[in-house]
Length: 152
Image 1 (cartoon, rainbow, N blue to C red):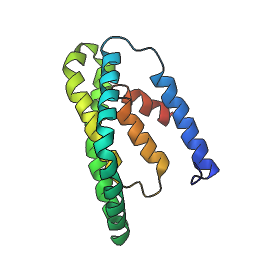
Image 2: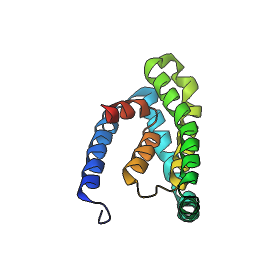
Image 3: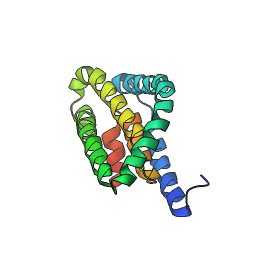
Image 4: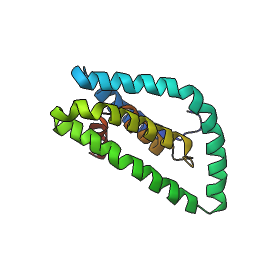
């Protein structure tokens, strides 16, 4: 964390403690299964995505710089298109437990697709925002809970 100033490090530390509080609670039933599947898929996808991430972050970062940040608006819009259904399915998971068997497969797959989107787009130095995006994807089906915790 040498590249972070103290305020950024403190913010990341606070977010990490909120994340750990939610993820370390005992989860049973379909919630526990969904979290495990999501974690397994994230681990499997890490190896092919990591080299792609290095290239796309560099190229898209240059593109964002050349367009004076206009390209960043496009990537933000694309991320919001992923975030809406991700939080929507998480909200449904929390509020309507009888839908969980239906939501588990599309929810986990959408969470991984959203995580890939957040990974390949450049952060442009906003590491805390990138961390929050990745945490929201990694903790699905509890993404809604994490977002509520970060807002409050």
